[in-house]
Amino acid sequence: MSGPTLKDIDLARHLLRVDFRCTRDLQDALQLLKEQLPEPAFRAYAEPIAAAIAAVGNALSNRVIAEHPELEQEIDASLATYGRIL
Image 1 (cartoon, rainbow, N blue to C red):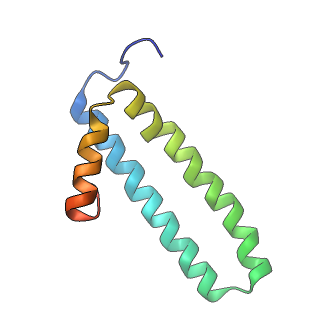
Image 2: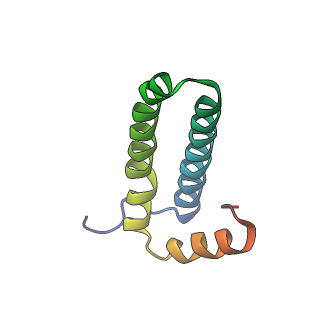
C-alpha cells in the first residue's frame, strides 16, 4: 500500500469501531446458535459467519491499521482500559 488513502483519522477510527461492533454482534449470534442448535446445524451457520467476520476484518481493520498504524496503540489502550473500543 503506498501511503494512506483514508486521510481523515476520525473516519479511520469510526471504521475500526464499526468493525469491532459488527464482529461482536456476529460472535454473539454464533454463541446463541451454539446454545440453540444441534452441532450439525450450528456448523452449517458457523463457517459462513466466521468467514464474514474475517471478511469484515480484512475490509476494515486490516486496511485501516495498514494505513494508520498509530491507531493500533489506541485500540490496545482502549481494550486494556475498557474491554472494548470506545
